[in-house]
Amino acid sequence: MGDVSERERKILVAVDEGEESLYALSWCLRNVISQNSKDTLILLYARPPRPIYTAMDGTGYLFSADIMATMERHSRDVAAAIVEKAKKLCKDLNNVKVETRVESGDARDVICEMVEKLGADVLVMGCHGYGPIKRALIGSVSNHCARIVKCPILIVKKPKDSAA
Image 1 (cartoon, one colour):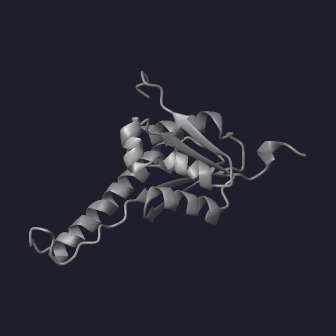
Image 2 (tube, one colour; image 1 turned 30 degrees about the horizontal axis):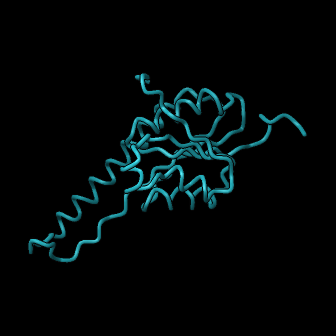
Image 3 (cartoon, helix red, strand yellow; image 1 turned 90 degrees about the horizontal axis):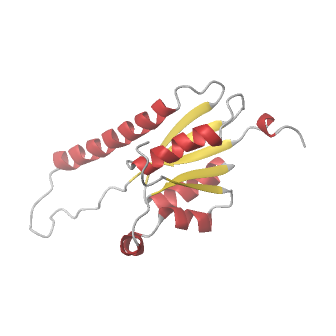
């Protein structure tokens, strides 16, 4: 069957602004990635979809084109900062290729689509540990992905007392 480290694996790590996802990434770097492997690490950030505003909102306030452009720019800056922070964690990897992807849309859909499209061998995600009410309202991204994706999925829980 050959040595596992000889196989080129695509490891997709979903990152967001939460420290849970960065913890999951650093856990993955310590426990999943082997230094001399031919692994490709893909850092994926799902940028929230741009809200669709009618020309006027409920208060009759008109959103001008430059306000819309400013909001779009801010969203791009946030995405760049998150991806940059995640890439910094990977700076000591030797033979592992690190790729980054920023896709727009609902995180649940984006992550599942990219696993399929990129042919990921494993999906790594953090767990936000929302309470039952918040989870019922917004739904758990990791639960959704675990039901949909066909590859193994690794959900990393951040220890409560950990400052990492």
